[in-house]
Image (cartoon, helix red, strand yellow):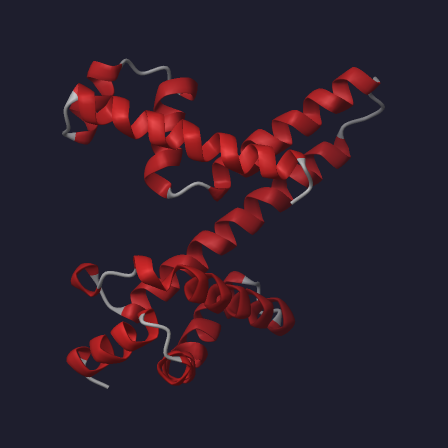
Length: 178
């Protein structure tokens, strides 16, 4: 399918067409699965599960897809990559916490809070995560962040405000077990 025809199908899917969505699913499922398979270490079941999660995410957020920024397939592969990175980071944090010897209840609770913070950061869009990491982990000034990102201080302040708001919503949902 050429790019123009695919754009027509994507627009129809964005408008709620189940038929268009099925067409996109059938067109891209195998490619997304083949992309996920090596990420899953060759484990077919995990690759298939990740692929399904990619399409669930895509269905929930298809209105965000902009054909002017790339192909639908590259957008799906980006979702797959982000999903894989989130899962890998979560597994890494959990395994690190499991290796920690006996701890007090307070230390265990701090580790749980740290885990939630890291998971919430991992769930943020890349730009929000980068802004929060630059500000709070790397402790860059607003001026340094603006210079690094090629924007104004006001734009960085606005980005940080949106990033903090999104982080707070995600963190709260995670604390409530969602």
